[in-house]
Image 1 (cartoon, rainbow, N blue to C red):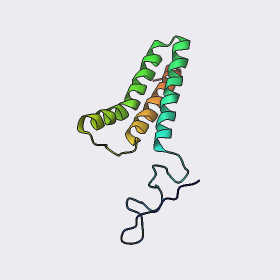
Image 2: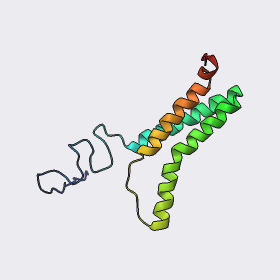
Image 3: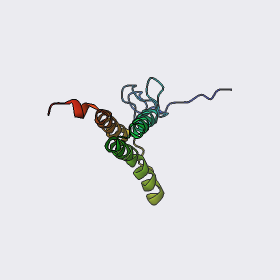
Image 4: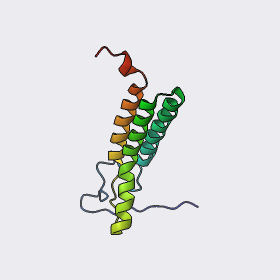
Length: 120
């Protein structure tokens, strides 16, 4: 048995909050993936880099990966804390966590060997 969703329309026939059909009201984009999926993927990749750095014995890269992971999950943790404290949701996709995670992932990846081989 499948449930059917009825879209609420306002003036112009568009759903409220619909930006040209790029984002559906159920938290998924057009390809069916949630922004949370991307955030978790980036966080998992950073943890993978942490494991690689720890197995290589590269303490600097391991600390860097741990810091990148901390920055990647900080917006989600702050959002949960805000929800518990104020009893309201921020209702924002985890874009800040994704951007911080990507930057931290790239930096940690390069810390595993590229910085030592660069002439500067």
